[in-house]
Amino acid sequence: MNTQRKTKQTTKQPSIKNKKIRIIIERSDDSYTSYAENVPGIYGHGDTVDEAKESSLNGIELLKKYNQDENIPAILKGDYEIVFKFDAESFLNFYKKTFTNSALERMTGINQKQFQHYASGLKKPRIAQVKKIETAMHNLGRELMSVEL
Image (cartoon, rainbow, N blue to C red; front, side, top):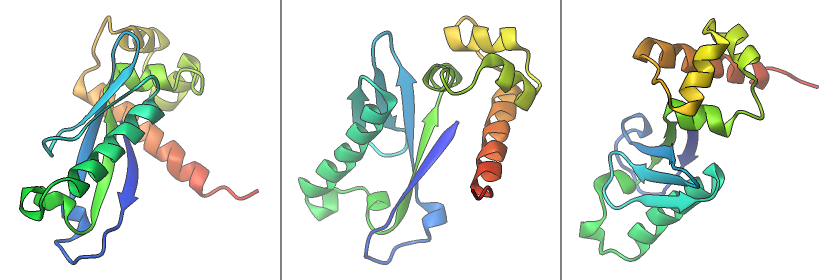
């Protein structure tokens, strides 16, 4: 599951489409951790997902601030996009107060019991199931973005 945050810098570099920093969010027993999958040295931690995200974003700023230019990864120079990626268990636990298993079943066609197994870590969803969940969330997001009140 991806949540995206775009960050703009001033120097010209390759297209933003080619420069994505993928930050993985994982849940442990009592907190959340985050790390950049494709950039060494970026880590975060927090009691909540938001704290872990903010911590990893602070890690990027600290890496850029306290390193010499030649030691800063090229991906952090110029424009880049940050994509937060959840594993299924972390995503379902983070959004459990927002989406019921019944609502997720209606949106994805995946049985409620399966969602219980995924959220508890008892089972891991197959790639096809992860794609169904991700597609349903993206479709919902697009639908909500088109609403005007």
